[in-house]
Length: 195
Image 1 (cartoon, rainbow, N blue to C red):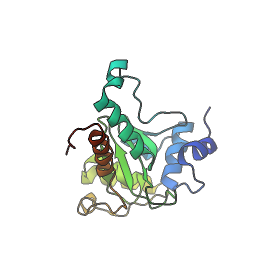
Image 2 (cartoon, rainbow, N blue to C red; image 1 turned 30 degrees about the vertical axis):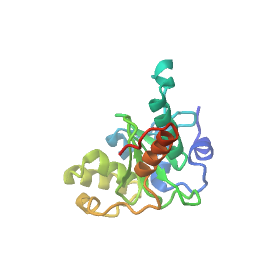
Image 3 (tube, one colour; image 1 turned 135 degrees about the vertical axis):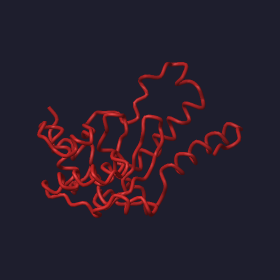
Image 4 (cartoon, rainbow, N blue to C red; image 1 turned 90 degrees about the horizontal axis):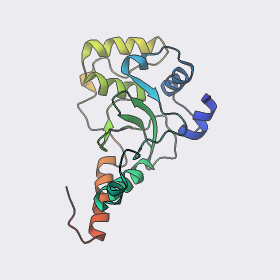
């Protein structure tokens, strides 16, 4: 059985785990109810592959376009600490590119089942996931905000519309970085860049 300490060591790779992440991990491991249940989100446990390509055939893996995309995704994921996954295949984590690995205050990044990255608005993992999953619905937001508050986790805003107004501040953009890696590979193969 996976332990919290194992998660901290192998997934978070830091001793400074934000309180909302600790709640998510402990509820995933112990099965205790938490507001993350309402979001359909669980922790990524040690040994789980965020960029699982096992569904691809050998011929697909040999395709240069697919191979360069998989490699580019891997390069981007090296700059993130992916810690959560939703029931619809979206992974969430901390964008630590240009940081010392501290998760507290790091921008939240998502990686979907189509291989797309995005920086999510929100001051914490819980807030960013709530915003993404509820699409900013004020009633759902209020219920989730109150549910997390019962666990000592405060949202930074009362109205979810306040989160979507400004771009997320980060030292780099995972989406742009992914495209740059793909294009570097394409140019090396003698092809034109895309996007």
